[in-house]
Length: 258
Image (cartoon, rainbow, N blue to C red; front, side, top):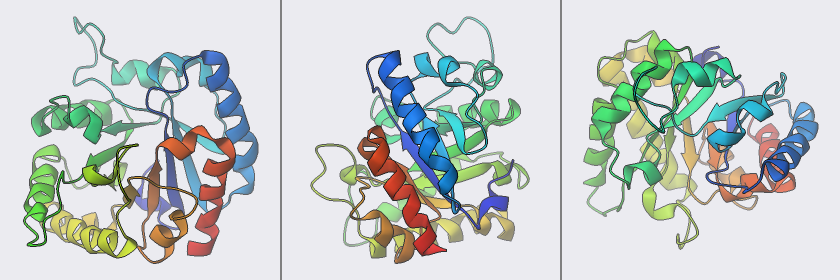
């Protein structure tokens, strides 16, 4: 399945990070989301649980897509602790988040992310590539960071392969419990336009159709603004994806952005 064919729908991704701490809890949460997902017609829902739970949560059906939070730059071999994209694909995973800011903070560089993207694409997975600045300056110098990330992470990725990639813009300063606030819909829209222009220059005019999602302290209160005013093609949801009721409420808001 290609992302560019989904532009009529918004992409709502639940990134559970390292939560919950038991398989029983993960199954309950996943089941609750699956039960509510069929009524949501204007969103493609992707759930990305911790890797140990992926095989147990297979068979998501048509209403929910199973995603991974990371995958390796190699498909097999002596890489202790890494998850092969082929192995992920074999247990029902269809998409993978790559380049998340929390992994970048641990030292993951753009060239490694580029290798991971290539391996995941070869395995047949769809990509959610995360980009975003650590600090937003008033002069706009942070845009250089965004361009550099896109150039390096997407190096040698073909125009055809771009159909399998979505970009999640996540300003680092707006992520996690320590964040004082989310970005604004206006700020997101400005940067989404810049990202589209950059992709068009790097990969051709068709790359302007690449879905651009917002991630960073997404909540039930602000989701509609990002979808409607910010014109986001979807949302990367963290903490709120651990509450089925809230996550489904966010997904339902996509009907107002149609």
